[in-house]
Amino acid sequence: YEIDSRFGDMNDFDELVKKAKDNEIEIIMDMVFNHSSTEHE
Image (tube, rainbow, N blue to C red):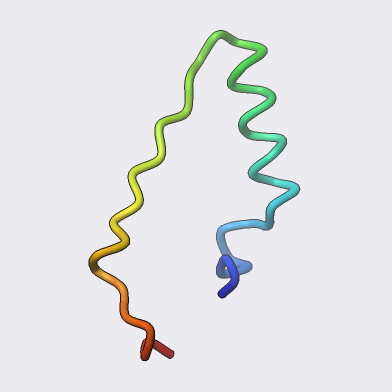
């Protein structure tokens, strides 16, 4: 499993979180795991 490169990479995400925190903005992640399958390609 990988993030689609069109959306950036983990370094971009880390930078987003850091800049948000520096500006007193919190990040909320909504992850819907029950919409996944062990057979998903």
